Structure formats: C-alpha cells, structure tokens
Length: 115
Length: 112
Image 1 (tube, rainbow over the protein chains, first blue to last red):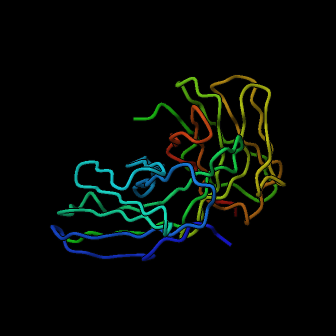
Image 2: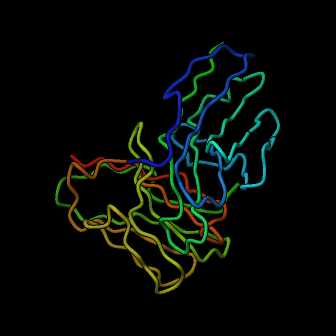
C-alpha cells in the first residue's frame, strides 16, 4: 500500500483562482516532505521542502503547510496562472535511511488551469 | 535548471530489441536513480547507485541492468524489450538520499 496519498487526483480551475492540493502520509520516521511540479513531458522540479519542525514554507505563489502530528501536508496555489497547469507530486523521505528506498512518492495531482 | 541529461527523449522500437537509455549529470552527485513513471501512478524505483561501481536493485529491476563506471554516467539497459516496457523512464541524482532530487527530462519508450 502506498504510504503517500494525494488528493484530488485531478483538478480544473479558472485562471486567477486559488486552489489547495492535499498530501496524507504514513511514512515514519519522517525526515522531510517535498512538493515537486512536473510539467507535461518534463522531469519533476522541487518547489518546497519542509522538515519535521516546519509548519509553512512559501515559494512565490506556492505555499506548503505541514502538520506532522496528523501527517498531512497541503500545497496552496494563489492567483493561478496557465503555467501552473502540471502534475504536483508529494514526496516523503524516511529518516535515517541510507537507501534508494528512502523516498516515498504520491501519485500526484493533475492540475489544469483554464482561461 | 538541473544539469542532468537523458537521451533519447523518445524511442519507438520492436519487441525483442536491446536498448540503452543514457543519463548523465554534471553536478558531481554520488547518488543516482532510475524510475519508471506511468500515467496516474507513483514513480517506481528501478535501480539506484551509491556511487562509482555501486548499483542496487529496486522493485522493477528484474528485466534491466545498469552500470556506474563514472560518477556522471548511469545508463539503463533493457536486454529484450517487450510491450510491457512501454513507459516514461526518469533518471535523477542527488547529493544525499534525503536531499533534493534533480530529474532529467525523461525518456519515453514505446515497444511495439
């Protein structure tokens, strides 16, 4: 069973609107959580990283939050633009792991921003 | 932009052919990965490497091999391609297992 669950699976919003993507995880012990953006036909690119002690991290119009107690994270996109259309992937890293299996990927949320 | 490159970007081949997907990075990262990505699914680990002369198997490693003769180069070989190998293959590198992953643009393989 995947230890990182993302919702919704897909989302369509109008340009200029805000949206929030969710990531719930069961990975433990937890080192950090990253959100990646993957444009169609490209490789994923890191947007934000949060460690256990951080609650909020911003990168321009992207704001990630983390509740380590409930094992939930969200990515909020403000004033969406057409270029925000992409897949957003949540990746949770297992702590104290020296292995390629340290990274746990969600299936991603596909976001489409329409004019 | 990340300095990690994959070739070819797109490839269509027939069943039974042997293919090698190339991946090179200029960041000096020791850790490198190959992932398989299908639409709507999470990335699946195929192989990874701790550094030169180190290769480890992931969940989907049984039908492919990798080598790591140089730090910057991590090619993936399918000895006998099958239609089930049709997928997107992503190469990535990182300075440490808990660090940021830097991905290549991907190689989209279609096996007829």
